[in-house]
Image 1 (spheres, rainbow, N blue to C red):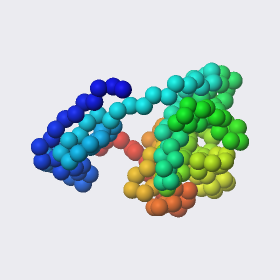
Image 2 (image 1 turned 135 degrees about the vertical axis):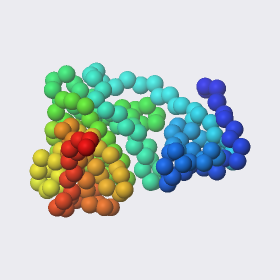
Image 3 (image 1 turned 90 degrees about the horizontal axis):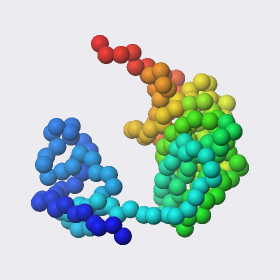
Image 4 (image 1 turned 30 degrees about the vertical axis):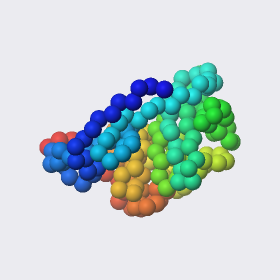
Length: 195
């Protein structure tokens, strides 16, 4: 096991997600990633985990650790097979690699992931945005609906309880609040440039 790196912060009060970064008091953090708090006032680098396994041959096009509210954890990998397709695999904590049910494939290219309301959303900017619930096959989000009418942004992100899909040309699509699979009229924003 790697040596633990611990940093003591006198009077540490937690993470401040409301103040602007320049106004965060010195006893709070703006952002804390890959840390753990073994006791009050102390944070440390989170120890890593090791899973020795091998994925099928190919180029990794995306990778996401998927945590669900029931405590289940999956690692999902998108691997390009060299024949123009990206296949999805899951890696269990025990190191077992499984092809995602249904043989879901995507057109070759990088893949983006986002997790919202216990669902894993996947996009590559070309194929329909897909959802995986942690069991069964991936399904197209709102097949034939508003997400599928050319709104297939490559980069996915969750912000203010909305699924944000970003197209390379600076167009953002965002879902209705609290419903990642529904787009209402007026859910597009285009970045025009600095003025």
